[in-house]
Length: 329
Image (cartoon, rainbow, N blue to C red):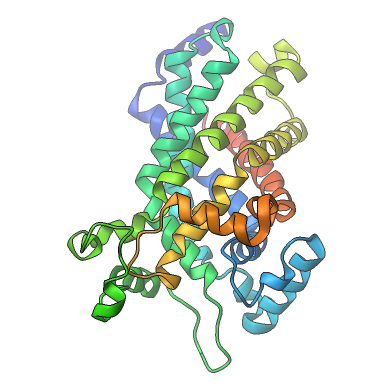
């Protein structure tokens, strides 16, 4: 048994190990996101202040009513609007995140004796940052698809390619009077670098990802080391129930730490709809939220966030661990 463990550890940098680690993480992310997709749609509408649904924000009952209205507008598929873009983003995002975490964990904490809370946090923060960098444009497209609601006269829902084309072209047809209002962004920045439209809110996303991923993996490692017997952590696989419980608690802690960043990020991501030729800055978004709703505005939809993130994180960690055991990672 010890020989097999040593062999597995020594192969953690092999391409075969990395691919299997990424596959386990990607599948875990897709399964977890599918479980909570309807709640994710409602939360985005609340966070981004969609005027049609803002009256329901602030409570679980409001989320239920909003979900019913979405269902009446678009049927069962309406609850999963933007989910195709979610899966296109989540698989590489989760694969890169969990794969990067395995690698960083190996470099920083090759043995259990070297595991510390600081190193756990750093490993989680680095893995989350790397995954966001490579998949962020897909996230912006997904948020735009989830934000848009269908008008009574419309026959079709927003498509992935349609949303991508709209983001790429937005602001191009504005008149000179509107173009002159771009004092918060360098002149012609979107005309010269249209790809930047797919990175609205990227800086605040990175700032939010550091506490979210860092605290999530920190909590996961800390709770496992303290709540599970040493023999179970090192040799006998924990039960799925134990993984679910620890993952759920880790998600709740991480969500609380990073939620204000998420609200600001959503506002910036949909900024192309309300201010298509402006690069919205942190300051004006934060001031706007505070002036309209006070400090509570930074936590709008948090109860729904818990309702979504707790099961999502629990399922994600559990499927990740199960996939790694299945693939002998």
